[in-house]
Image 1 (cartoon, helix red, strand yellow):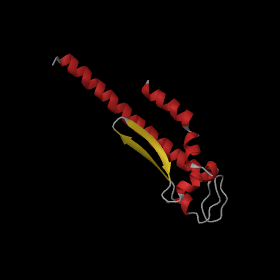
Image 2: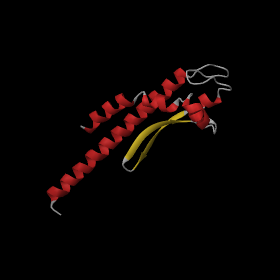
Image 3: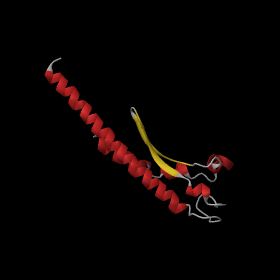
Image 4: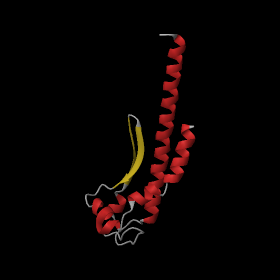
Length: 120
């Protein structure tokens, strides 16, 4: 293979790897921001009224976590419940008490802007 073509391919692979790492870092930043926002709006402890629901025990709120998913060509961040009944908090009564999706979506336009800056 021509060394010029080989160099171009190597440079493209390096650029791709650097951009992917930057995107993963961006996802960690936004995952942390989303979790902090959720925790601010949903205070800890039993019988505390939060923006989303009234904590009966405080466990559901305290067990929400944020993480990053990175596999092959897909990278993203998410919030999730560890309690089995978390799905009911999110989906019951026509999503009346939904917390996680709206929290993540609150950052969508900022995340999209920052992502575009990395990809340029």
